[in-house]
Length: 234
Image 1: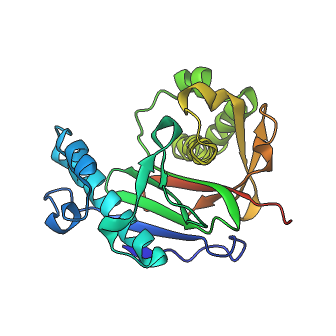
Image 2 (image 1 turned 90 degrees about the vertical axis):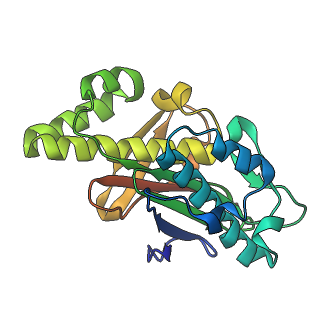
């Protein structure tokens, strides 16, 4: 696991870590810091790769939070929130976090709750066999679909898929930050790339356009994004 070097514009106290999985084996050290509920959840995955991803990402998250909180990884009090988004269930200024994993990689973001009120992150492995036209109907605004098609006409299939996935991870990062169900809100959000890696947010939901979103560096064949809402100074 390593700390990613990102924009100076990130809020104070925000860090993003990348975790690379070895999907061929279970990591006993990771399992040792899981709670009983987390252990049971991991055991319910039928595929080894899914068990590895969940256990390794949750253990890494616990260790990062423990470092900030000054406690042991097993002592970090995690609870599921609305729509299953976990949070640190303790009084005081607790760190915020979010996790995403896909394929052989995971991203974990930690944030200072005094600086931001919500944070979300997403990484996706890009597949060439995605039916883009079907996705346009289900998950993309008319402007997004037009921009993705234009990218394909200008640069070919590769550019088209890159444009599609960049908007997809931007949507997911934002909706995970808000803490709502992703599928039913995809059409409420339009993501539009800006120069320098920023992502412009257009939303039919009041307040969601106040979030900040950026594209993140990702391994070859992946796309990733980060979204957060800064706290208003008192």
